[in-house]
Image (cartoon, rainbow, N blue to C red):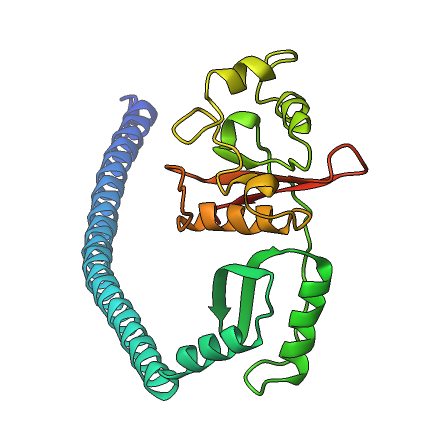
Length: 273
């Protein structure tokens, strides 16, 4: 007997395959999500582990940095102590050297040179000062180069010419050349102590005497002391500046001395250094 299946078996088989495919896809997706979750968790654990390691390394590096700073500060202290030790040893070895240098400098210093500053850097001694002329500087260089064992190879670095700016108000006394008395009056006017035509009034009021605004010829002048062509005037100016004059003017800092008025003349100002 022949049996004929009249049911829609093809549609049923197709439906079963579709259902199986959907189940398979669902299970595959679920498995994929599970695997992805496991992979994510594994990577996350690795990341956390590495972050912990990094944090540990940062802490250790910070500790090492602090130790390095301490070591550097200790090295600086050691260097400073060594420098102090060397300085003490150098001072101990050369403690008498400045005394010898200054003593020898005084011995080799010619007249007319005034030292205003001395600076020593290692074996180099630098001096600054003033000289009356370039010849005095040359003499000092010759003395240092040949007359002493404490200095050698002197070098002249710079010579600067300078003028002292003084006004009549900066002069407290004057020794005016008075081989003839009338010549005193034009000198007072020409040097600016009084205006033109006022010298006679200046003398008449006694301003030229000791205690006046401009004492002149406090030694008596050439007519009163001696006629030595002005040398006695220079001597009196020196005494006034030193403060040892017989007729001493108070608070003297600068004294004017003139010579040879009425003919080709000269003059100088002596002052407190």
